[in-house]
Length: 421
Image 1 (tube, one colour):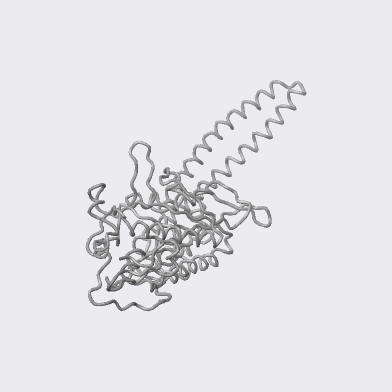
Image 2 (image 1 turned 135 degrees about the vertical axis):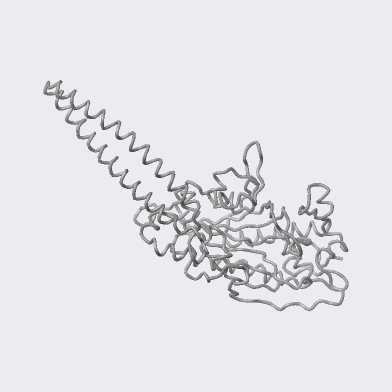
């Protein structure tokens, strides 16, 4: 949620940045400023009223001491009227604050100045491409056929147990999954992140705090009785660890493995073959809460962390800076990482690393004390490090040979085997 002071002080600049995100309701900026002006005027009246009550209260005390009871009672009657006015000012103030919040939650985060113009994924900026595209042997197969050949995961069995998009991992496929989770977690811990195991369901307040609500409720599964949301990413419960906190030290760094649940409504065609798009998947997340002056330096550091993982997995990848139209509601700047799927001959997204600046922390009220002991909102960042389904798909496809699938050297200590098949 944008800070009202930032909008008040830079209204036209905010509108210009929101236009980069192709936000159509720029009139909301003017509406929220008008409400803010009303709120501030009401606050001034309330403050003046309360100050006047304090002055009269002292006068009443003095009058009683002097035995001027009639004058004192007259003053008390004046105070009663002021108190009634105060109640109305408080009602008006609460109403204005609610109306301001209702508008603010509809306004996305302003994108960083480096975010390119654009409306579609095709307009994202390719920052770099690393690694050689492998040349596969004749008869190479996509990962869904390799899974059947080597009995690695079973989508049909998942349909029987739950429904489409819930794979069952088996044998070496299950062990590869477990190995990747440990591999990613170990590297995050070595990089200074504290490992946590969060709940896999969150309440409405947590989902609101990180920006999933009210923007992405259609993508999440929710329980009817309690109103708990199955997490779409560990970002949600992990970032909420610091909700309503004033942090003594920065940065705060967390990593977590969790299953992730996404409805992914409206997904059809080749994009949903095999593990390309599923409703339940495993992911290791990294989260940082940092000083505002450091957040873009930290963003580059987190992006480098993801790059190292992909290099160790011997996968060709590219880094994209998302254009305004392809960014999330809450992000100020996002790097997407895509690996090349050699059998499918296409790039697959495996990670997003984002800086949210104060957008989440303003909702969560996560603060720190600066050198002047003043409380300020921290910046929040997170990234996938990494999401497993498309990593598994690319590993199987890119490392396949005529007589099996080779496991990258860095992963062999975790799998306990060098080859599938």
